Length: 150
Image (cartoon, rainbow, N blue to C red):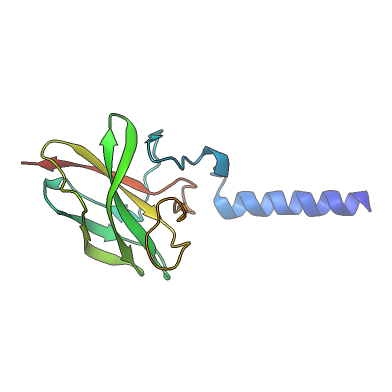
């Protein structure tokens, strides 16, 4: 019986490594606070944003995720930390040139981040309840950075 259990555990481990490509990120290492420190970010093909003028809306060049989609949140940077969420828009699947309306305008010459979240609630973005979207190819949260121009 114990060899059967050991075999199941080994099979599960091998399947997990093959499925995640060896890039497993423990859930406890994913920051969930409002101001979380930015660590080494693995590039993801799921998100693209360019530097852009400051204003009341951020344009995300592309979001490439499968349905049912994700929340695309704009966060301000405070040094190397992710700060407040300024606004969010829902992308139901792959989108190009997605406008994200902001509650507070971005300022010229500052750094910001786009971070993806799963819709874990009732269709309304809730930073405290919606979980961070993890890219299955990289095993890391999907974040992209940009700077605002004047």
